[in-house]
Length: 387
Image (spheres, helix red, strand yellow):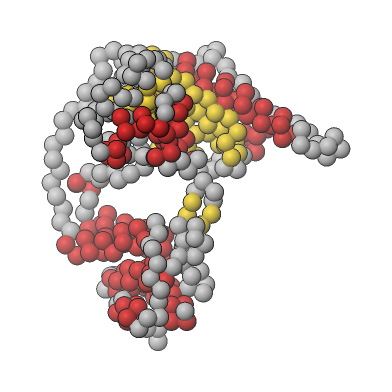
């Protein structure tokens, strides 16, 4: 009969010195999240939602939202399918609160074309209302030109007798290898920091990966540098290097870093984006949101907690190999795991969280779901004992 585990075995392994405790990686977050959700299931209560204030509408045009972004995304895909940007017969998409557009074309995870349009030289002075189609068309033209250049350079690396028939833009799109990534920037908000603030204060004024950044010269605010959040993530640019690169682009020296966002120093702004993409050619268009997204209180009940626990359980089970090894932290930009296999400490935490989940499933109306979890726990424990 298969044994059941409650986590005590894992603790004893480390007390006996059989495990090596290393620095935990990002994968541990999924384990801790599962343990937290399981604890919450025992004490969860349905809460009454707090009344929300009505969303303010701009008097000069509808505020940019996901529906506008979806229309723009599908329009770009029509242009790609046709092989060129065509404005004839295209209905305008009137919006306000739009400051910039960035469009990226990818093939196999590689960026082959980028297009970016900034609507005003001053970050906070974007047009009150405009037709989104116009800057979208310019960004699409830029990205398509870059893509065609990349295809030509690729053909130049093979001899004439090896060269395949040239691929056209519609060919790439129909084959499902060309994916679109669209970011629409809202109006930036200025970052104000007190004089002689701690240099690390700038990192508390924006959320890397969620906010985009704009820096401009204090002596000439029209000289600006923009960085979109997905651009930074795709290139694995850490916040410190990002800020220093942007300052360098503006002609500042290293000493300007300590004056960011302060009176007399480089001006700093953060902005939010609506970010749309497809995970694959046959996958739906989704809005990407990085960071913690609040749930409506009315929807956060025992059922939703159990669904979260099951989703996290399936995620962890998918990371456990036949020999009990647990995959390390996934790096989406390189489609790899770093490290390839998680350390003993993270494996032990996975055992603990999944043991608690299996015990909960055995008490549920459908106890059969605990079998797969128990089998994964057994494999991980054998691996820990053998090390």
